[in-house]
View 1 (cartoon, rainbow, N blue to C red):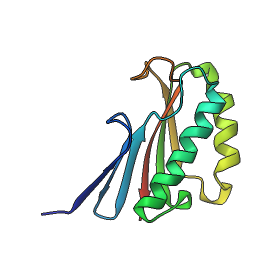
View 2: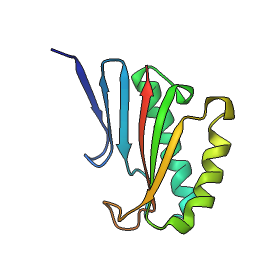
View 3: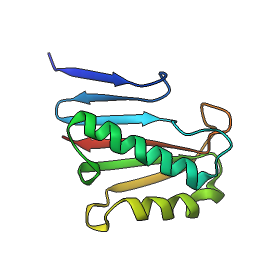
View 4: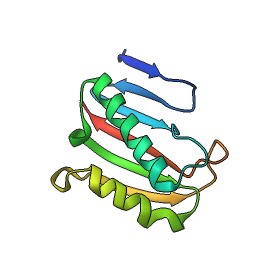
Length: 115
């Protein structure tokens, strides 16, 4: 049997799971009404926090799936991402557009990282 550790925050809309040396994070943690860039900064701060609690950091991210409410915000959130992630540690990334789980949210990241 494998060991799974879950760690949750305010709601089930954002949480983390550690399984077999890999950390899986997902969620929407920003506040409705913020710009896409502001929401992205808040999401990345929470990712730093979650990775730290799991015992790793952003340089160990393996893959990111970026979901946007409106793909027209891509350049704005991508600039925030590029300022946050050191180029030499940039993971595989993909993005798409879709309706967010909470009204007013513009960005959601699904992150896979190594411990």
